[in-house]
Image 1 (cartoon, helix red, strand yellow):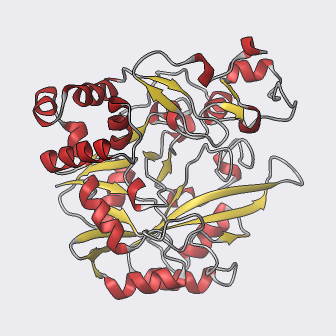
Image 2 (cartoon, helix red, strand yellow):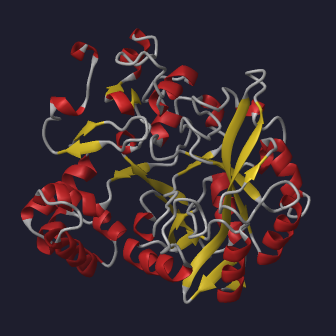
Length: 409
């Protein structure tokens, strides 16, 4: 069976999350997007866990809510002494997956002694990655761990602000419990293939959604004999049955390029290095983006691949494509009508991206069909994301005002 999975979302109890991040709204969005397995998110939060437990049934490590399938998942923020920078802290986010409500309850009991779990869906814990794995494994030997959005400048294992250069410095041992690395919105597998140390881990892509509309903006595709916790984890460990990932174009992510949002500075790594990584306007340090960090740690050239890599497909959220094609903002009636027409015709969003040219032209007007095909072929231009600002795409030349370069100073 084909299963499209999103392992990283947040509930309505997480900071900056929409009140629609409950099981009812998430399930409705799963139908529209075409997602077959969705993370619960935030299972360490007591109120959210109570809702999950009271509203779902459990079988083979998978939860069922009115026919929609969920996997128990949560994200934690770890803070510990950075071994590479004496006197400084490392701050990283890690996903935890578990196979039963009972295991999740036992995790709450041990983790609640190390940090407050009821103030945020993503709790802050003062411990290293290895300490987390040891603590969680003491009550659930089957739990698995995925470092989250591993290149984001803030709160990631390789981030330019609070990360490390070597995975061993965040997880000195117990790495056998790490089944995958999450690429994040600002990187794709091709960028991660430049670091050979990541070859032993599967590369997963998830939405990290804080609202129901954003689930599935990145996702993972599996072909499985059965849907179970063990079959999913086995596919991640062996890559057998792991078909591909759906990826943001990394330029769309908020931290692809280097930059300084307050001064309107958006530079690629080469330009930033010429500036000494300082903002040419205010002279403060710029936020170094994902591309910069990948290049710094790379031991392969762009385009080189590990053995038997899992394929990937770039996508852009369908409302954004329609909006660009029609020259209308996303919340307008024409965009909404075109979106609903495509969903009605193909059944869900992911089916739209798998459709052929003939099908698209039968389903929707020519401009929108051409736009979707252009996205699938990569025939688009970007003003890349930087310093917390999402990138913007176009189907023609980028307007020069969108991005400043050295020639502007």
